[in-house]
Amino acid sequence: MALIGLAIKIESPGPALFRQERLGKDGQPFTMLKFRSMRVGAEAGGVYVTKTDSRVTRVGAFIRKLSLDELPQLLNVWRGEMSIIGPRPTLTYHPWPLEEYSSEQKRRFEVRPGLSGWAQVTRTQDGGVDQTPRV
Image 1 (cartoon, rainbow, N blue to C red):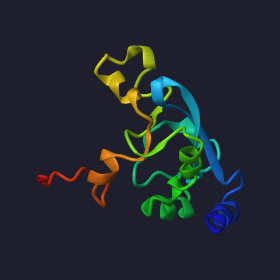
Image 2 (cartoon, rainbow, N blue to C red):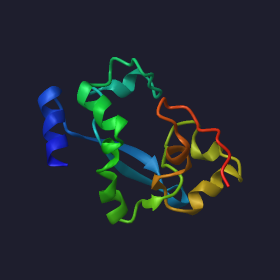
Image 3 (cartoon, rainbow, N blue to C red):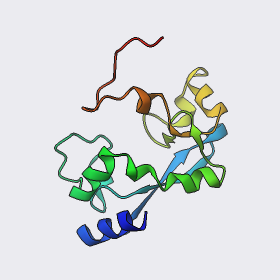
């Protein structure tokens, strides 16, 4: 983890860790940690990232490909804010505010968010969803 942090600092000025407020169990906000994979201030350009997004650094692209950017979330797990498996933590503002979730959608907040979840398990190498039937 120290080598990843050093590589980020060498390539791009700013902190090695990215902190972002997310919604956890019972909809309570917490600060999720990740290794920074984009240039500082990149969030102002929007939420979604394409493969050719110029905001992503070279080190960032590498650590994202191997999911190493998620490693600092082990601290969130240790602090009890996240679990290893569960729905990924929701942004406080996206896709919509907590108050606008349906009762079915709010069920995701009955458990702690996870470091890994369904989307990570079914994701293909190109970022799409694996449609292979599961037994």
